[in-house]
Length: 171
Ligand SMILES: [Zn+2]
Image 1 (cartoon, rainbow, N blue to C red):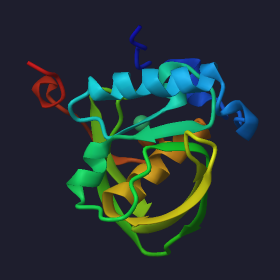
Image 2 (tube, protein in one colour):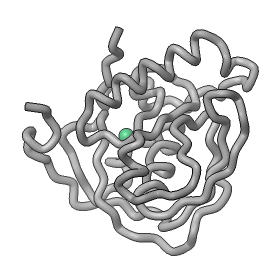
Image 3 (cartoon, rainbow, N blue to C red):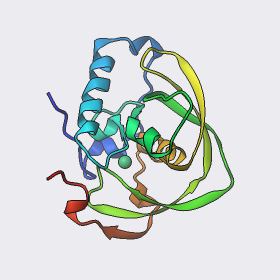
Image 4 (cartoon, helix red, strand yellow):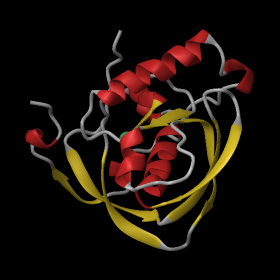
């Protein structure tokens, strides 16, 4: 069953999401959710990441598409699942970057994001890891952890505009 990606009026997008007990990670519920989110994200040609609230589940989990790593020629260990993510460090250096969201169609805008962040999270096997990133990945980490706090990019964006449908719909 494919999960629908909910749109901005949905309550889950405005809640502070619940932490997942590390012992819960191996349960069918969480493992099934990771698969459902992966399937939902694969269907979005311009989607690079997805947070659990975006499928209506108010839990602290997000996934990143392998596409995001490819886009930035990432050479380190690629992590696709981030459970209970915490941003440990954000650079003072910030850049205004273009951003959109699968739950805030069809808006795009510019958001000021730290150019480098360090994130700590559990992966899908319940192992804790720390990852440092720049560029698109750093932007994704900030956008997705915002989702877990009930914050949408449109709360922070400047120069919001509508993107034509052809931009994000598969033909
Ligand atoms: Zn989003």
